[in-house]
Length: 381
Ligand SMILES: Cc1cc2nc3c(=O)[nH]c(=O)nc-3n(C[C@H](O)[C@H](O)[C@H](O)COP(=O)(O)O)c2cc1C
Ligand code: SF4
Image (cartoon, rainbow, N blue to C red):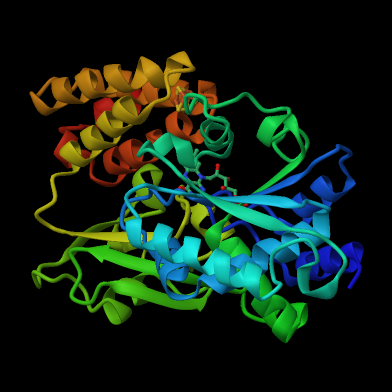
């Protein structure tokens, strides 16, 4: 297939990035293919830092060739001859398996100077991160890959135009790239026939936390959240009622059971003030302390912040202090917390600071009693 045909097929499949933002993969590839430069790159984001997630690890350990094949196809489609898989250091088995699989793929002609007789070159290297959540953010990852401190870069320029070493670069999640072979095996129309609305295809949902049956469950987009939690995961391990479910990692909203009819899909979660992110679902029973959960979100942001912008670097620290005031009974701090969350949401450079308000505000809005919020304090919000 020509490069243009490959990109058209990926676009027609409706595949959206599985790393969190849900950006259409075909459009990203087209941007890189049309960009000019002496060298282009494919970077696989295998930093997988979201709480409760392990789908990238399972693919790399269990079916590494699927990912390698997806990266090689991305290379042929965009004119990129070099690739990197950036794997978090906490995944020693995945690093080992991927390194070995790369050697085998090279010996079999899937990687190298003439990929499967196409006359085009593509090869890849494994790189290991050093344990920072923010290095999963694509521009921070690129800095880390270049040997620099993992600080977020302002966009524009987009990595697709000026990415690794300032060259056009595709940055895709493991799951996005590992989905590519099945799209070409079964056809874009087959893949697009699964899902709901603009959320096409399937998603490996990773269910963790206080559940009877944790694990990975791949399903077409559209299954209601409640069905995932109560039927697939069998409710809580403790047998107590579910109080909240955090979907989409540490920056995801806490969804109460009243929102369990929300279909698992990008736009539908967005409409409920949530996000599906990398499809991590972490379940909590009714013993969870929502004020402390909100505090944890701010504390996590303060610890993991790259420090580049003020709303996140300073805001998260002030957030912890403000929630401590609320926990001590000072409800006058509630409007302050809301105001701070607005500032972080609107003023942060990347989604670490920008999305931390989601777990905080969802805890406050869905469980106001625990914050001591009266109708008056909520009105002040
Ligand atoms: C703080 C932060 C952490 C992130 N961590 C990851 C990650 O671990 N893995 C990942 O694929 N994407 C992560 N992302 C999203 C990436 O920035 C980027 O959108 C993604 O790698 C693009 O690939 P995709 O289009 O295939 O999803 C993170 C984003 C932010 C803001
Ligand atoms: S929001 Fe936080 S992590 Fe993102 S650029 Fe700003 S300081 Fe860095």
